Amino acid sequence: SMTDVIPEADINKAIHAFKAGEAFDFKKFVHLLGLNKRSPADVTKAFHILDKDRSGYIEEEELQLILKGFSKEGRELTDKETKDLLIKGDKDGDGKIGVDEFTSLVAES
Image (cartoon, rainbow, N blue to C red; front, side, top):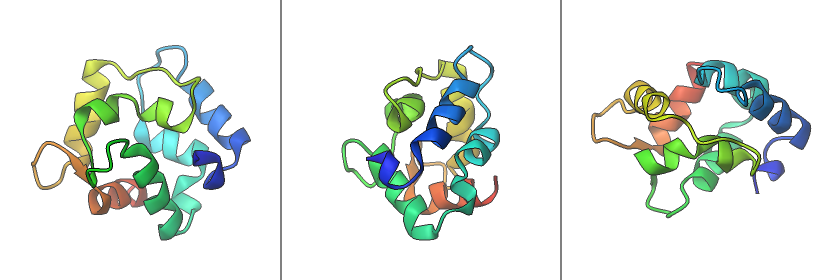
């Protein structure tokens, strides 16, 4: 589970920050989680947890549930938030985010 990678307190803090329908900001989310300070192996682990169907990619549907991937308390992203994040993360334009793209997205945060 995600708490094997990131302390639960940090997850709760990050989820809570975006609870009120505040525009989702991936960079801020990553910082609140401290994910940018984790090892590449931990970032990869987080990716695989978010990749629910184990396709090797985070597709749009999974991206919409990114907050829920960290905590059941998380909300779904809006369609706009999801699309914005997909555009930001999908460097090769295939409509989904691979592990390298996810790692880059975290590193850029």
